[in-house]
Amino acid sequence: MEKRVSRKVRVAYASLISLHTGLENKSDVCRIWKKMKSTYRKLNDVEYTCMITSLLKLEDLEEAKKLYDEWESVSPTKDSRVPNLLLAAYINNDQMETAEAFYDRMVQKDIVPGYTTWELLTWGYLKQRQVDKVLDCFKKAVGSVRKWDPDEKLVQEVSSIVEEFGNVEGGVGILFGVLAM
Image 1 (tube, rainbow, N blue to C red):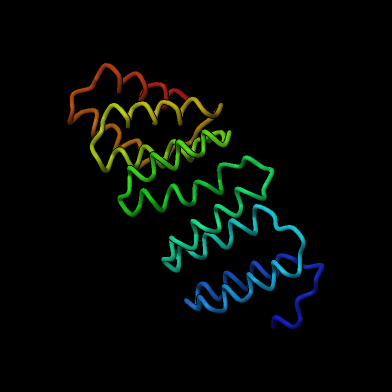
Image 2 (spheres, rainbow, N blue to C red):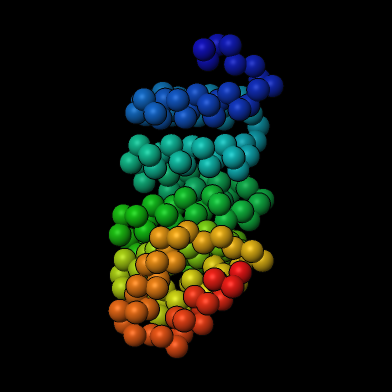
């Protein structure tokens, strides 16, 4: 199948990477990535996203971090979707301190956090039961877009923590703001 991939059809490489990721075949994922890098002078954010996602699915956070560093050094974009992949991995692996340091790095690199960044951080702080940080991130998520369609489970969890910790003043205002959208 690889032999039939035309140089003009870049998406075929990403499809092959995704296919081999689903088969949990890391060596072929890496081989195809190397071939793709040797075929094209410059890779785009979508291709880096595909490979970083694959490495994370294959539970290789260290290689994903290295690839992110490479992306950061070669990509002129400041798209928060690529770093959000690692941010989510840190949060899902209960590495909130690392996630916070990584978020700080994003900001230093002038990557503007989008609503997904704030949602991820909200989930991380929910796990840690840090109500003030939950409300701060939730408020920033709401304020980051004109019309935000929040995850229902996230709204329920934020409501629950507001009720549990009795932070009614701060929480109710934010929640009513979301519901009014």
